[in-house]
Length: 636
Image 1: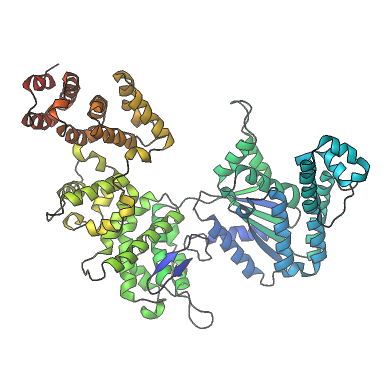
Image 2 (image 1 turned 135 degrees about the vertical axis):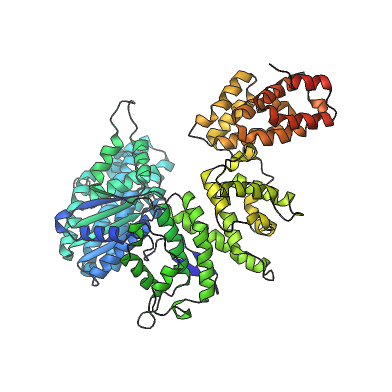
C-alpha cells in the first residue's frame, strides 16, 4: 500500500495490503480452506509471527479470498477487529463482544433480519458489565444500590456520599435501559446464556461459518491480551465460528507469565499450557530469507511504478508481474529477480505499463535498489516492515535531493542509497566515514576508505587500526556498487542524512540500560584488577553491545586524561581500538603524564612495541622528559 504526491513522489504506508508481494498466497489459501471446513469449527487459529513480518497483510489476503468465495456474504461472514482500539476500555471483553455484534448488525447481509436478536445480546453484555461493576465495588453494596428502598440504611452505613454517587453512576452506565432481576441474571448465568443466544443467532442467520480476525493483539498491554483471549474462549467460541488471532507468540507468552507468574523456578511452564487451551491450530509465519527480502524490496519498487489498473478500462500490470513471479516459483526457488525478468513479464514493455513516470526513471530506481538490496537485506532480519521503512527513508532523502541539488547533474542516487545502507549496518562507522570525508574534503580521495575498500576487495586481513570495519556485513558493503565511493565528494550526501549524524551527542547517552550499568561500574571502580576484569570479559556478554561501552569509555578518556589507566585493558584486549587510543594519547599534554601514567603506557608498549613507537616519538617531540620515556620503554 502506498501514497502518491505528484510525479515520482511516493511513500509506502505502514499498513496491511491486499497485494501479495511476500508470496503469502499459499498461507492465505490454506487458512481460507480451513475456514470452509465445517468439521473443523469451532476453531481458534493462532497466526504467530514477529512484529513487522506481515501478519496483517496475510489477514487481508485471507479476507479477500473469503469475499471472492462468497460474494453474497451470506454463507461465509468475515469480520475484522483491531484489539488495539479496545485498549482504553475498562472491560475489554465486553468491548470486543459488543464491537463484533454491532459490526454484524450494521454491515453484514446475513444478519440483516436479526437486529432485534443482536440488540438483545448487546443488552446481556450490559448485564455482564454490571457484574464487573459488582466485582469492582463489592456485591452487597451493588445489591443495595439496585434496591435502595430495602437497604438504604445499610448502604449509608458503609459508604460516603461521594462513594455512593460513584457506584450509582457506574450502575447507570452499565445498566442502560434494562431493569435488574438479581435472582435470575447472575454473572455466571449471563455467560452461559450469552453463549447459548450467540450460538442461536448464528444458526438463525443460516451462515456456514463466522470468521473473526483479531489483529494487533501484540500492541496491547498484558492485561488486555489476556482479556481478549478469554473473551474468545469463554463467550464467543461456539459452533460455526473460526477465530484467527494474529499475534507475536512471545508477547502472548509474556502476557500470560505476567498475569500468572511461576510459583517456583521448577514450576511447570503455565504459558504453553494456557496457549494450547486457547489456540487449537498454531500457524507460524516464517521470517523471510535474505533473497526473499531482496525480491520484496524490488517488488515494492515495481508496485511504485507499475499500473494497478482500472476495472474494465486498464489492465493491472502489477498483477501480470506477480503472476509471472508465482508461475516461475521465484520465492520457492530462492531466485533474485532482475530487470530482465521484469521486462519479460510484459508483451509490450513501454510507458503504457506505468502509473506515471518513464521507463528510464523506473529502471534507474530499480537498478539503485537492486545494487543496494544485497547489502541491506542482510540487516533487515527478514522483516518486511523494516524493508518498507528503509525505502521510505531513501525516498524522503531522494526527494529532498531533488530540491537541494536540482541543478547538480553529478548527484548520484546510488551513492545516497549505499551511504544509507552503511547507516543501517553500523551507525558508528557511518559517523566515522563522515569524519573522514571532512578531513579529506580538500583531497581528491578519502584515503582511509580507499585503503579498506581495496583490502576488502582483495579479501585481505583488515589491519588493527581499521579493525572496527572488519565485520562481514561491512566488508560486503565496501565491495558493493558504487565501488569507488572513496573518489566521490560525499559531504553533500551526508548533508541529507544530518539528522542521523548528530556528532555532538555523547556516546554514553546512547547506551542501553544494561550497557549503562556496566559503563558506570567501570567508571566508578578504582581497582585496576576489578575494572580490568570487567573490560576483558565484555566480549563474552552476548546480551549487550560491548562496542558501545568501549566507545563511551574512550570518549570519556578524550575529555579526562586521568582515565588513561582504564585504557590499558582496552588496548591490550581489543587491538581494533589501539589506533584510536594512540591518537588520544598523542594529544595529551606532557605535563599530564606522570610516573603512574608512564607505567600504564609501558604495559601498552609491551603489548604492541612496534605499534606504540610512533606515540613515544610524538610525545618526545612535544617535550616529554627522557626519564619518563625510559619508564615507558622499560623492558619487563
